[in-house]
Amino acid sequence: MAQGFSFELRKKDPESAARLGRIATPHGTVNTPAFMPVGTQGAVRCLKPDDVKRAGAEMILANTYHLHLQPGDSTVAKCGGLHRFMGWEGGILTDSGGFQVFSLPKRQVAEEGVSFRFEKRGEPAFLSPEISIAIQLALGSDVLMAFDECIAYPAPKEVARQAMERTLRWADRSLRAFANAEGKALFGIVQGSVYEDLREESAERTAALGFPGIAIGGVSVGEGTDRMLAVVGTTAPRLPEDRPRYLMGVGKPEEIVEAVALGVDMFDCVIPTRHARGGVLFTARGPIRIENRRYRRDQYPIDTSCRCYACTRFSRAYVRHLYEVGEVLGTVLGSIHNIAFYEDLMARIRRAVEEGRYEAFRRDFLQNYIGGAKEAESEEETPGPPDRREEPPKKSAPHPPAPKRRRPPAGAR
Image (cartoon, rainbow, N blue to C red; front, top):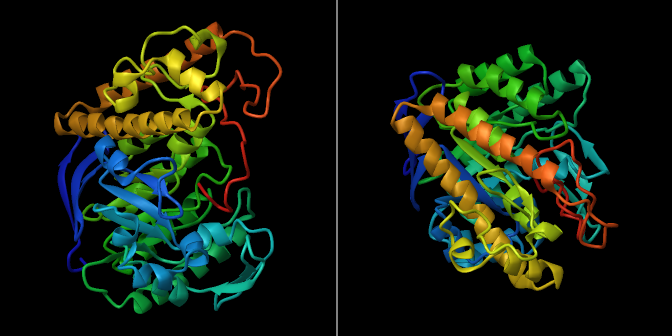
């Protein structure tokens, strides 16, 4: 284990592969299973660091690609590192930038690294394992990610194998560039698309490199929930028990609950804040679209079981009004609530594992959450023509898609 970083496996659920653990970092403890809110550009959208902390988050994710682009990792380093720069006292994990680079339309992949153009300025740029690690070290994160090749779905098996092999070679180069930096940890990443034998091989070879934590990458790229969970079910059992397992870019509440049952310890996703910006808010009975007319006189809180600031102070009717008139406070309250919902879900998950009843918790949660969402859909009033803030909800999906107010940054999960 890297100095200043450790992982303790505290308990295993008797009826599933769910695990209870604790990660120690130089910036505090992270209890697992854990959800990391995404602060792509050094901020969790619409929230102050204190809001994120009050919600229960102990570690956040920041984006190497975007912070290297603006304000620049050298600027962040001169300002005392990312923790001081953004006023966040908890743990920080930085991704390698690989996912964002491979989301760009024009790129050239070679053994040395990836050539591309920055999305905003159009300037030519190059990213390699050594450069990615140097940027992350300059940012000062607690957990760094090895540079990997993330491919789109679907992909031919030979393309997936080539990307997996390159990821393993880049993992070795990332380790050498990292050089056991004091107080930090470098995680490896398993690739292999949806191919079971590639995932098995990648998991075993990545673990053999000695990373203190391992991520399951290359998911949430269009393969769907069932295939994603199949990948997790194949990969997680082949990862060392004494190291944290991180499922990158996932996900919806029901996906997290299922992945925990398969042995995953860490998650990140932009869904809570992105959905909040589109007026989709999470409740124990499934997500709701707060701008629907049915909530115009609703005096209940967003979620009657939630104790966040938004739910203890304001009604659905008021929050809906804020969204309707375009008042930024609506998005702020929605984001506070959604992050609190996710962090409360993780606390309930940990408690269920602690008490040895995770399978019962999983069944009850999915019954209430998915069943409640379908019931709510059947009761929704027929929406009028979509305006600039709203897309017509897809009645076949429990999660209504968040409206596209503006184009998100490249590769943001």
